Length: 604
Image (cartoon, rainbow, N blue to C red; front, side, top):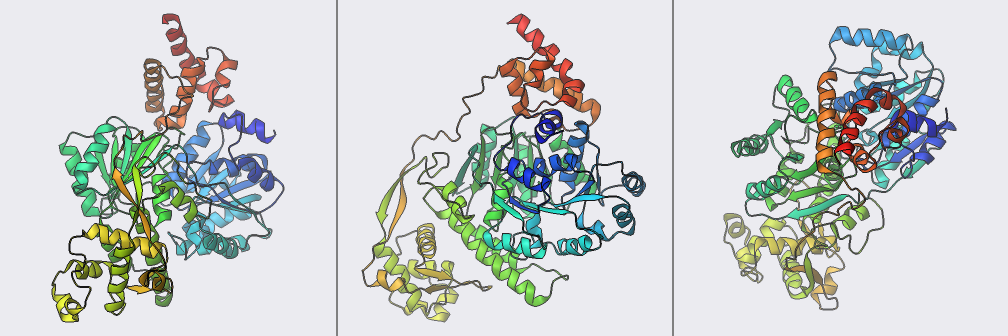
């Protein structure tokens, strides 16, 4: 079979997405791969299709138990023999699966990095031809990535134990140029085909709110999306508990997820979410990694994450089926302090202390860029794309900033006041302390330090903390100020600051003039879906899922059901033209769905 036949027969698609075909061709030619593809861009097909075409077995290394389960369920449902091996399995089940793997029964084997040193697993590797080793979430190997995992450093040793070298492919959703180089060097990729397919997810709407009351803002969002599937990320377990309880008190079907719960409750709550038994998951970032649920309509960040990488990956769990979806962040200045505290409290006995301190400094640097995202007035999508090294746009018309009415305001005088205050405070104050000085607050710290006696004390007493913070962040972003990476970050002047102070450079910043009516998300005008038929097909899908004890989206995604509503197939050939329907699923489910479509057509 060629790649197009595999794509259609097993996965139900007739065309490849951007970058997929080039990656597959290079793998089939025997070349190593380093691919950066955003969440929802179809990374898994890039290694699953070659895995079926290559002669040996493919091993997929992943830290994400949920992803393993989802993908193995989906592969098996499509007629592909796959298995996962991780700590969540009962021991007898693990041994049985390993015995079948040793016999060469499976074509694709998913494994957690901790299992690579297991003697029985190595027996499987030594007794079977391994055609490819795929490393998913490859950024975990880099200390400069946002989710470094020491267990990933074992991968190179594992590969070296094989007497021949399989093709090695590395995939990640988010990586800067520095992290990409680190991945390639650490994994010892040989002349890899490197590709970044583009980070832009046009179906996602981005918004940053600065609400006085976060829960009231959240309530507006979930009420507007009532009945739809959403994730609410919180920065702490305490916030998860509080937000979940308050949503439940308001009669929303919400559940909680964090590391402090029993393993049984976490698994049960996650399954309820995956199987559409609850609408809202309130969780820390411990939830969602590898969740392949396609019908998440919105993701809300109740607290600001520590870095852009984490934010974009978590927000990207919305709209994986290509349908319009919302990514909304509820920001407050206290989020910055919370994240700095969490960074400072990080402990890891597997990493030397000196290295750990370097990682913390890097995390504080990444936090600055996340803070900028929450306070800028230019296009949010453009900011994200530029962060990852792509060319941005002036306006995307699908984020809160682009859909608001902003005007350029001259802030040169206020910038001079802020820069002068930093200078007179000996370049040793944080943004919070700077704001207190400028507003004339006589706190104990300010009095003891003598800041109440400098000429800039109280010079901006009529400005808000938020305004001072926004202007200060604007000055940092445009390199008039530098914010240190120390545990207690302070502000310092750069060489460019002098040009502002002496009046040679004018500083402008976009400021909200008035709020215009928002379209929020770009509507998909290409799909003409009959709501009653769509609801009927969803019900049919759910019944099949209940019988098979698998998530409904593994059978068919919402996008596939909508394509059925558009094309109204009633024969085998017509059904195979539906996006997401392959030969195996046609044989398994086709007649059941076509029966309902025939009923609909006869009535209409």
